[in-house]
Length: 365
Image (tube, rainbow, N blue to C red):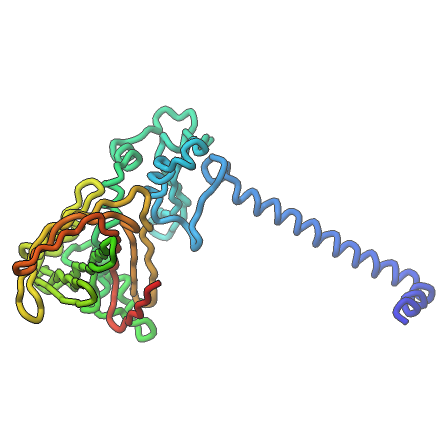
């Protein structure tokens, strides 16, 4: 039926049919051509040559990578990739606005490490003798594993969403953010809901001994101090006992020294890739003291880099696992008992953010 109608239309109105057919053909041809051009443009946009040289461009699942330093250290230390990766170069893109009265100009900027950019063949900087590494570039590029671990395990400033910062620059930034962050549609989270903590988990080879150790710092008080608590949950043959201690620490000192922490006579120290934990706690139910010394040696390359989720009103929740796998050694003394920790499986993670109204659901596999 359709073929008959097409033939009849062609015989009765040949000119109109020819024009219509030519129009359809031209439209399809243009569409195919545009799709082909679009594919070429897309491929070129992802070309390493346009991204700063190299053979492969690596990005994150949700945008740029936030842990290039960790990735570079893994590439240089990986036995599997060492013979395949000749050079790697991180870069960061941003928009800078040049502003003068009555005029604002947006400029796209890209920054990187000069020696690494040249190593991957970045045509923009190759042959530029004045484009060379600063001392900070060399320190960032050639970081020791312990330096990378310390950078991952740092503490984070509490976001100033309420205009309370003593620093004038922070105040002006907070004031500009406050209008949108504290609007009825997007209220800022309560400053009392901020917390950040280090968490350690150990298990003996026979499974009879387990311990969960956390160091939790709360929100900043008006005095500039923060409450910090050390808590040990110790399980022996299925029986669990909790031990804890509390103190206050200056916020600036905490940010400058973490993950090195002090809670009274309980301490955490990171030297190289070894965490040393000195314990002096008391049982929460009976005040029985527990003292001891534990060390956690991080397995090389077994880390999960930092990631943060951002929400409305400045809400943020972050997570990093500096030690996915490690080994605990040490001794614990509880009353007259001595517990030796030998070659226990170890784990350490780190959380930060606003936790008011957040609920945890724990599972174990």
